[in-house]
Length: 406
Image (cartoon, rainbow, N blue to C red; front, side, top):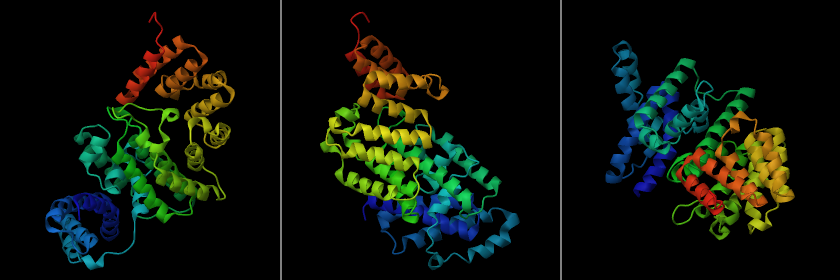
């Protein structure tokens, strides 16, 4: 088995092994640390010695021994830990897949979104602290402290290792989906740094949503989120030039789009929309499918895109939804109509100085022939984003419309 295949296997097994340990020993923090140590040991040993016949059992055994070693260091609990040691038998590993339970635990409402994201990537995604820190461009010590605090808060909250019931379950599921959505977005369009994409992060989000979908195949929003990620990721190869410069949607070479991901995504959209309820991820997936259906930018069904954004705006009001509706409206009724809708966002504090609002306004001003206004807004937008790839793109747009007097 190749090193890459071993890495994929370890990421798949991490939540299963962690779930088995937490069910057996009942302490998330210690179990999570022990599983990370076991995964590290496997990453070192398996490429050299070969993958064991029962890799899941191997990991449970090693992790359990590491956990017991940790427990034995506490003299007040020596007797209990000694009894626990006799239970370490690989054949005793239950077949229960606790991935969903772990996701709910990592997305506990007492945690911040940043902590939920970091803990999800570590405990369920199988990424180590250094990998997560690199993904979010923060020092490893900072990320380690964030993860440690998150585990302590979960412990202090006294959370049980089980799925919540009734309305609480649906509410927590929405938090889980939002965290996975944030992970994907950061991977697809990095908020800072020199690269537009962080492919591993986007693919990890897709992998985790696939795992949730496997356990909740009838949930329309889970299906919708998976479809949205696949349809969006299908465009990745066409989003940048060979030099790494950003290519906007209407200028992309659609032959580079991944038709396999698009076909799978469109089928998932059809399935999700056939259900009794309609949620924001389903609507966003339907919008992505409308773009994917168009052979050229000119063939895009903009009235349908606009209608879907109208519905989305009603059920999940958000300034970004309004901003995207303005783009669609401009395609239907002309740039002045789009600019008029954008003006309704000027008083929204969440959008104050946001590079997306500035760049869309610049684009529409350029279409009206107001090159001076477009130049000013492209320049402001470039200064408002921490993404170097986006900065380069916006500065190139500004240069294209730069007035001779500037």
